[in-house]
Length: 279
Image (cartoon, rainbow, N blue to C red; front, side, top):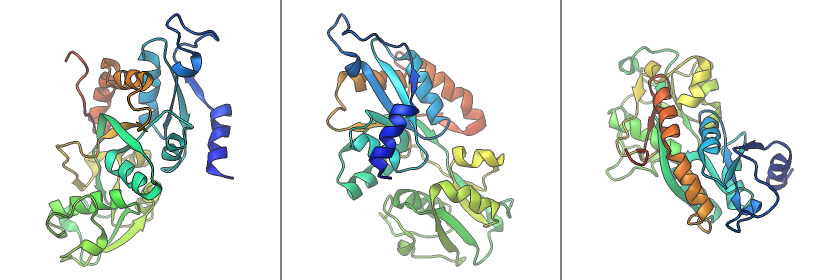
C-alpha cells in the first residue's frame, strides 16, 4: 500500500486526541478547529510520552493529536506531504539527510533532549577488550553511521580524516589498527544484532532499554556537549512560523516537559537540551 494512503488511514482510525476537545464553531478569536488542531507524528517512548505531555499543557485554543508510526521514514513523509503539522522523532542531521534525498523543506525547531548513544557489547566488559578483527554493528543510515564512526574516532579506535564529521562513512576510515569489520544494520534492528552476539553494537537508549540495558552498561559513550544530535521538533518551512507551531514549541519547552525529562535522566540518560522559560 502507498505510504501516503497508509498514513492517512492511521490518521482517521488510530489518532490519539490529546488535550481539551474544541467545539465545532470558531473560537471567539475567529480561529477554526482545523486551525487549532496540531498533528504530531512520533515513534516510540519517551518521544510519544513527551507529545502526550505537550497535549496536556499546550495553551488554548490549541489541541494536539499524536500519531504513532513504526519506522524512521513515515514521520518525515507525513510532515513533508502535509499530512501532519510536525514530528518529534529525530535530530537535525537526520532531517537534513531526508531533505537532501527527497528535495524536502523540513525545518528543525526546538532542541528538546539529547539521547546519549554509545556502543554495547554482549562479549566485552570494557572497550579495552576489543579484539582484532571484531565485528562492529553500526547504523545503515548515513547520519547515524557517521555518528557511530565519530565516537570510535574520538576514542582513538579508528582514525577519520580531519574535517570529516557528519558525512563520514566506513570508506573514509584512514586507520583501522584492529582491523574491525563493520556491518551496516537498520537502526531498529541493532538490538537484535546485540542479541545475536555481535561483539560491538551501536545503539540508542530507547532501543536498547527493552533488553534491560541502559547507557551505564555501554562500553563506550558519546560526548556531545553541543547537543548536535538533540531530538527536535520538526515542521515544514511553510508553517514553521505559524501561530500553531509557535504554540507547539512553547509547550515542548514547558516546565512540565523539562521536569519529565529530568526524571528520566538518571535512568535513561536523556538530557534536556533547553531551559524552560523563566529559568
